[in-house]
Image 1 (cartoon, rainbow, N blue to C red):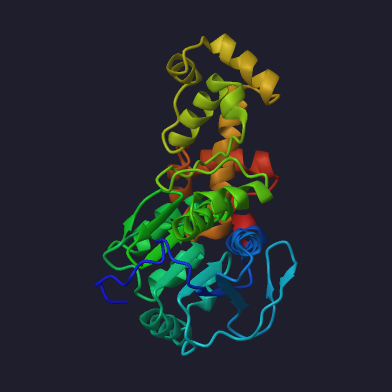
Image 2: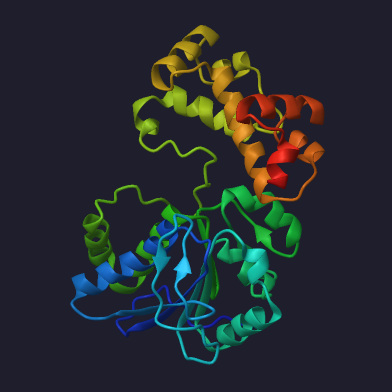
Length: 326
């Protein structure tokens, strides 16, 4: 896509918007639903088809989501078919989908579209097609570091979603819902967007630039700010863990009070929760990446690969090397 900007789709406009959703097996069904259901609801509320969306796959066969449910599609992706917006929705297995044929098709389709976007791991495919060079983008927080390394020419940010000219990217299911609400609001006005949000009893809309949290606290933010503050500190220091005393001090409580808060709210000590948080991050790196065990240990705050392996084995019942092989 040329750097010169096309007329944005995020503006007041009643003309129907033709949207092609390219869905890959391995995607989350919540990401698929977050992309299409707000548009479906907007059509129902408006009483006309203002978002003319269709789902396709590369083969024309249903895409199998991570929960095992198939997503019915109307056919195979045709790069030469006219569409205003191309949305790439992917999850696990994107490396295997990034063929020269697909990437060439994405580039061709993007030239004829007004906008192109990546949802969750779909951002990887949009980037590999060269459509994000020199732009800002985001992806799911689990992939943020690896994505930044793979694409140094992209300004990678931890935002929930990013719109940079004719390209948009989302971090996951909830940010995708936020983005689609923003699209509805931009084109049809706030009243319609509020009606769409009300259909889903959705009252947690966030700004695009809000950071993606490592731990999604839901409504805990409103119930116990000290717990929320402590967990936010932990997730911000996975690679260089803080002492529990330091976390308590920054959260404005004593270590004993912090322990009481954690036991009452989560059922374990702050130290146990912090270790589990780091090991969960390590498990994702072991399963989903090819980085060395020494690097996994470093990224998750262990003093050595041996210390990491011992903690990992105790937590998951198998060594990290064995888990990766299996």
